[in-house]
Length: 289
Image 1 (tube, rainbow, N blue to C red):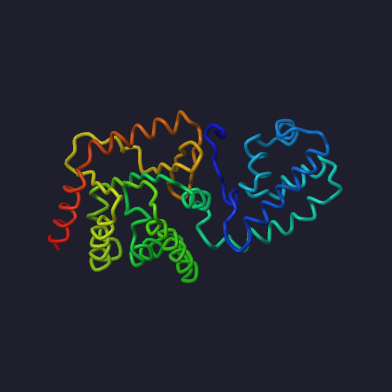
Image 2: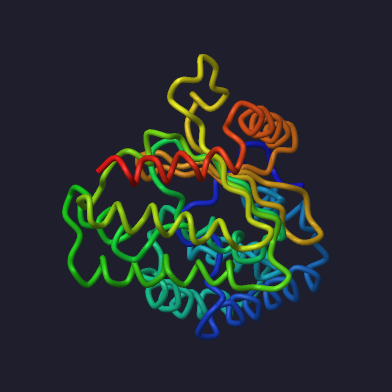
């Protein structure tokens, strides 16, 4: 499913709140109406417009945000008489309304995460977002450079905590994490914040069905030296992967690339401490201060 190396950029996936997703769905249906009236297939429209067939289909299903440039181009190609150009301004207003909800570089990922039935993550630098305390998340955003405004930090912290509602679902998605020991020893935000974060990990680990492992520093082999990544399995769809570095993100749908990352994650779990050993290490780190 999808296009090799697919990169979903800022605004490509709609937010599922405040009616915005429904609005994009309506715009997608409008595009489909004009396309079918013109007797053009999605494949033909992709070729004529210069966009991928994956994007054309996703926009019509309301799964991708239609960019203004795309609406303008297909309006001409489908002889829509300016109808698609007219909604372009409303699309921009909708994008602005939700643009502060999540950091631009992660918005596509959070949309997929919310629908996933499986979530697996290897984190080499920090505590995974779904496991962060409010104070830890705030410390991470406060240390950003260039500086973020207080209002922006507040919004992004709130959005990160909202994501953690996944942990309260029943049935839970299948979830596991492998965290590098260095992330557990890095007292970001100060020891008080870090101590609270470590205790929170121990508490989360008590939730039935969640699996938490630590990759110890003394391992002579580590399959995760290429960096952090997340594997997501959406309901009824193939597994996808997400990687992020320096605010550059990729939501990967190519089956072969995802397969390799899934195999890598399996190796990481085999190299890491067991869950019982991992929790014992977290307790040991807590007692060292």
